[in-house]
Amino acid sequence: MGLHYFGTDGIRGRVGDAPMTVEFAVRLASAAATVLAPAGGSVLIGKDTRVSGYLFEAALEAGFVAAGVDVRLIGPLPTPAVAYMTQRTGCDFGVMISASHNPYEDNGIKFFDREGGKLSDATEAAIEAQLAHPPVTVPSQRLGRATRIDDSRTLYQEHCLGTLTKGLRLDGLKLVVDAANGAAYKVAPRVFSDLGADVVPIGCSPNGRNINDGCGSTAPSLLQLTVPGVRADAGLALDGDGDRLIMVDHLGRVMDGDQLLYVIAKARQAAGTLSGPVVGTVMSNLGLEHALARLGIPFLRAKVGDRYVLERLRETGGTIGGETSGHLLCLDRTTTGDGIVSALQVLGVMRQTGASLAELTTGMTKYPQVLLNVAMSRKVDPQTLPAVVEAVAAAEAALADTGRVVLRSSGTQALIRVMVEGEDERQVQTLAERLATVVRVATA
Image (cartoon, rainbow, N blue to C red):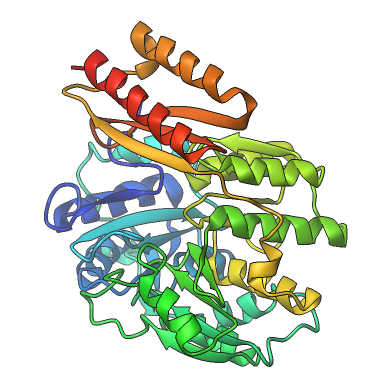
């Protein structure tokens, strides 16, 4: 049975609408405390720059304190900082208040375990089961306390700096850093500046309402203009909570998660430090798989969602994986996706090789990819529809081994996502449109 509230990355929604309400946040805190710290304990809470962060921070604090859990508040810092600081401070679990790349009207709540990892499905299910009960208030002598950890940014910054190969610096590099007016707005520019880079910050002036607004990893056009405009060596864009990364080369061309994954994996292989396979998702570009194959690097695909990439990495002993969107995992450096740490890995390769970002990505050719969303009147598994199965088989036969077809039901909407990719752009477009038509008719 699926979870009702938890999605692939915590709980998320429009502020004021269920479940993102004050009342629900208090109940959620109480439920989480019961499951994750039943004998009392401590929780670390961070947030991004959304104005509603104040609301949910206060509500969660109240719920945890009432349940007898001590609260450590670190304020606006990236999601991976919460993962790191939870582990470093010895808290029983951590909470990040963020809706990631969504607009400011949305917000969300993510959890980390004491090791800085995402919660298992079973643990999330246990928390959801507890939501059926009213919030707990323990006797006054057992109530929790709330304190702020003032040196959190400095500690996390030092952690990031420590993930760059020892002895490497970024002196002489000019970088444009776009923090999406989000959680990394202070720490990201300072990390790269401390390593000697000449930093040009954009998207680093949050006002509570401009997070991800025309900036960050989901809107890189300003970064693409700025990098060549100021003659920078590269640009990097994070999302609102700092766990995603895309980069821009000196010509203003976007390098997505697949291309950055290729750069990191190839460098790890050259250094003799790559272990296990590289893990992407069903949506990772076929060009990445082929480029890694030419290097003799095994490549596996997981379901969409960085938590599923993490699961496959743990199952196979791999350390490098990620998504096209820029959720990259370098488990030899940190426990979760971290945009700043991922950027340092790529910049470190640039430094070690003397090559530009453009040069480092030449070994991978992205195949044309068309993604079409087909609305349905009801949710249905496309693999159960004979006409769709037949159309997919025909498309795969036409592509042979030069392309892929992926049909995926949306986890949140009545949509089927039709993705076709291959070497021939015109063929890919034609097949995608033909397949989308068949899906539309079959699900009418």
